[in-house]
Amino acid sequence: MKKQQDTRNVRREYIQGQLAKENLDESPIRQFGHWMHDAVEAQIKDATCMTLATCGADGMPSARIVLLKHHDDDGFCWYTHYGSAKGIQIEQNPKASLLFYWHDLDRQVRISGTVEKLPVQTSDHYFDTRPFESRIGAIVSQQSQPIESREALVKQVEQQTQASKNTHIKRPGFWGGYLLKPREFEFWQGREDRLHDRFCYKKSDQEWIIERLAP
Image 1 (cartoon, rainbow, N blue to C red):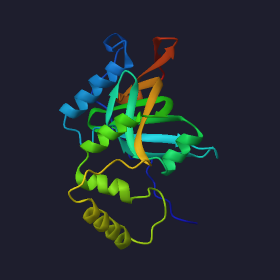
Image 2: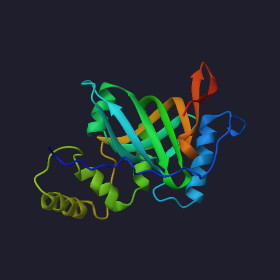
Image 3: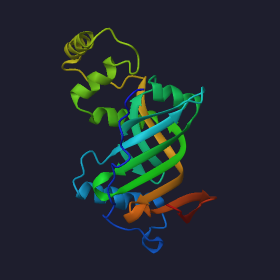
Image 4: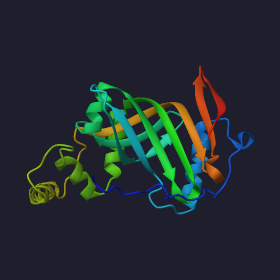
């Protein structure tokens, strides 16, 4: 019989705060903005990291960390290779979920909705703001595809770098941004004895309905 690692006693208390309905903003977008501001002000490392969960035609869910680049009343945006695993899954099933977790604040936010590509002009503008090396990497990397070796990848980067010197590097057509248009939010504040505060925002016509959920 294989020896198993026992993690049943790995636990801690959540004591960083509490969440009450009367303190929530009526807009989940603004409420998210407040919490993101708190995370940045608290100097939480990688505060804009979010888990992006997608599911393709085969029904198998997949999750990975990406970076939130901007958000507004329309939704939440990130950038990637359209031909990556997540890009293919979004093409097959344009629905996804985002999860933010700020450990030091004992907070998490879950956001679900539909996904669409950002306009070409928006992706062009963001690509132009990226560091030179990041733009080179986006052009060279055929994301999620098998590669021969690390050395082969580095060689491609070096060749592209030489070819791109003193030129304006245009965004490749296979790379760009996505927008998740939210239909549901959940704000979670860890509490003592696992009696967490959880509030769900659900879209009803043009109005957001707020409900407290059992922990």
